[in-house]
Image 1: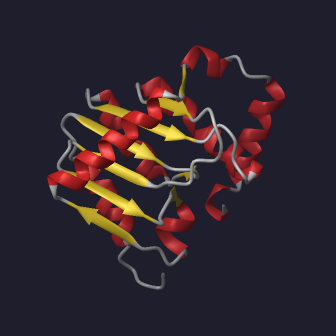
Image 2 (image 1 turned 30 degrees about the vertical axis):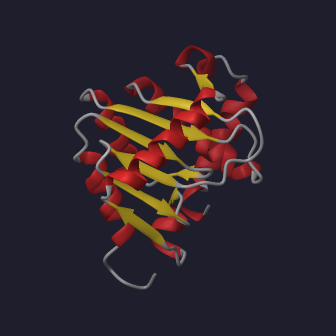
Length: 172
């Protein structure tokens, strides 16, 4: 924080926009800025398999509503979104094409991008990256996939609350 260059945001953005085959994302708080939202959606539209694991239950209801407000665009673009069946996922990782990964304290949200002091590792060693990918696959085996059709059928009051929460996204 306090520096013009946003290292974490730029690094993840570049990794996602450079993805050729697949992207795996684990984040409990997905409240991105427009650039990160577009990077993930664009990757899916160009044929990259983008999968995201988010918690079914979030410890911050307003943040959960704001996160949901971003999901329609991702689902429409072809991003696969999964929700954990049990507990609150608190892991944070992004893995790209099996040759790049980051893991640490940063979420894919504006607070982590621009405000908070975060610490993430960037990995380019195949061993740890394979382990992260296996852990991701293990989590998906017990998670529930969110479909666009199902998402569009949520109640109008929920959709409205999510829209309201999205207006607060830059502060969440």
